Structure formats: C-alpha cells, structure tokens
Length: 453
Ligand SMILES: [Zn+2]
Image (cartoon, rainbow, N blue to C red):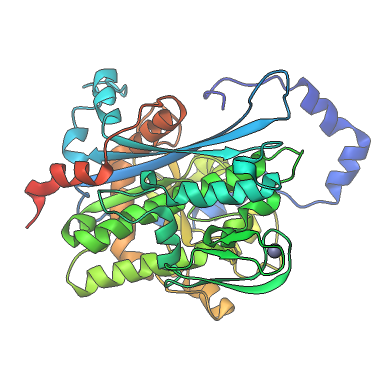
C-alpha cells in the first residue's frame, strides 16, 4: 500500500473512465460516491458522542497474518508452495508508555525489538499448484491432509497441553462436525466427526476425509491453476481460529487473566469464502465466554476487529471533513445500504453468512478514523429480520463499546494511517520476522502473575 501523500500515476485510469462505453456502463450502476456538502452534513449529524470506558486492559494481544505463494523453482513457475504466517503479539499495557518517544509520534525501534520477542509466530506450509503432498492422488487431497495436519499441530496451541486450532474448531461446534459428501470423490455419505473420529475413510473411494474438510477450503484447489485464493482463505480461517484457541485456552485456565485482556484482529470480524460458515460457531463461542465471565462477576474480555481498508473505511474517510472529533456511528444495514453500498438495496441482514461482529465508525479526539468491529452480543442469528434490527442496538454493546474506543484512543499513532500500535507491530512481525517466539501462554502467565487477585 502506498504511504499517505504518495500517489500512483492516474493516467491510465482517467482514460478508462472517459471511455464512452465505460461511462455509459457506469451510468447504469450504483456505487459509492463522494458525499456532497449537504449529504456529508446530514450523515455527520447522525453521529453520536463516543462513549468512554471503565479502564484499559492489562494486556493486548494483536494478530496479523500474511500469505505467500511462491514457485519452488523459477524454471517451473506453476509449481508452487503456499506459506501462511500468523503472528500474535502480546502487549503489556504497562510497557506501552515507554514505547513512543517523548514529544514525537515515532516508535523507539529498540523497544519494538523487545516487543517482537513477546510474539508468537505460527507458520503453516501448504501445497500450492502442481504439488502433491505425501503421495496424495491429487493436489486437492494433499491439500486437505496438509490443512488437517497443520491445524492439528502443537504449534497452534498455547501452553504445554493446550488445545490446537483443530480442537478449537471441534469444540466450538460442540464436539460434533458432520459433512454429507466425500471431499475426495463427492459420493453421498454421512461423515460424523468427533474428537475420537477426526479421520474417516470414504466407503466409496477409500480416501480419508478429515474433520477440517468441513471448512471446504480445498474446494478452491485445482491441480494446475493458481491456488493463492485458497491459501488466503486458509489464512483468514487460521487467524480467527488461533485467536479463538488462545481465548479458549485462557477461558479454561484463567478467567481473571482473560477478563483483563483485549484481542485485536486485523480486519472485520468475519470469515469469507468456503470457510465462512465457521463465523457462526465463533459468534456463539464468544457469546458463551462473555456470558460465563459476566455470570462469575468478571468483566467480559474485549475482542476487536480493526479495519484498515475496505468499503467502510473508504466511506468513513470520505466523511472525514464533516465529522466532529470524538464521534461514532453504528453501521446498521440501512446506513450501509444507503451510504456505503451506493443506494437502497434489498439487503436482508448484511453479513448473514460471514460476519460475527458489528462495525462501528469512530473518529477519535485527535481526528483519526477507525472502523471498529465488536462481536455480536447474541448466540446466533435465528430470526434474521429481528436479528438485523437487534444487532445495531447500541445499548447492547455497552459492556464493550467505551472500553474498545478507549483502547483505540490509547493505542492510535501516526506511523500508519488508521493503525494502532499492536496491530502495526504484529503486521511487521507477520511480514518480516521469521523467528519463532516463545509459548504465548507461558509468557502471559509470567507477565500477569502479579496482577491476579
Ligand atoms: Zn470418496
């Protein structure tokens, strides 16, 4: 992404837009436009004063992930291996003060290096196009095996006897996962997975179906084509599953600590493409965790999806000059249809198949704009039209909203537009450093042992 103020050449773009065919075509389309002064003022008048919370978490864990798809040899560019790196950075809020150099918005690189030692990088290697893993009959079958192995690996667990990302997937589905046809040959068969049966042989083709096939990421794999889309879907699912694995590990072992933590995911609280359906058990899982903590008298942990780009951010930036500092708005379906998707649509619960969190636009006191996602405070979306209304009722987000905004206010900085420090660090970690960190849970336990009551 180019830095602010740095613009790519617009020559080719202008020619295209002036092309009469393209112009005529665009006249038949609805799309997001720059708001007029009247529109901007009208939209801004719907923004409310942003609430404050009860205090900051003790510890923030931020995640970020990067996918890579590279030829194994330059002589065979279509023979590729996929590589995904998910980084989780644990960020002790007591250490935050010293991170930014006094009197500037720059970050002290030596202190950043220290934070990178508190990171856990989980990397996954997958077969790309034209690579058959462990003698599988097809690239797709090898990919399925690799997904199962990688998500079952100890690397995806936190602490010595921790659950793995695959265990989390089973657990949030209440220990039972079913698929109704063979992922290898397509034959109809009821595959019923549970913790004791994670691999089931297909009676028709004798190939093995794995519990992780349920996410259907392999369906995008072709023997010779470009498989980078499947690698990106895997990355998306792995990142959300890893954060859930850490939350589950803490929920099972240390509620005090979990209650004092915040988790920041880079991007919306949503899963797209084939694994999208996992959004629904994730939504139920976070709701259950919050419920358990609330019932025991703890504050529920904070989970935030922060978006740096995408439609909502582009819309929010186009509003910047109209918005007062320290204001926010919930992006309800009506608002999204009218102002973000370019006009009224037949939208029937936006993100029904993908989102497990609600988006809010926040403009901070210092004038920076963020899109903040917070998990829907409901176990499920049954009764779609009722849910579409309820999900944008701000009062239901009271336990999180002020705290989430406080955290963003506290962590915002200038280095990257609309980034907060931990996410920027996790991003750097995910994209540059390949040094694996220690075990996240040991680290958190060591750090916060003094804070427990
Ligand atoms: Zn089969």
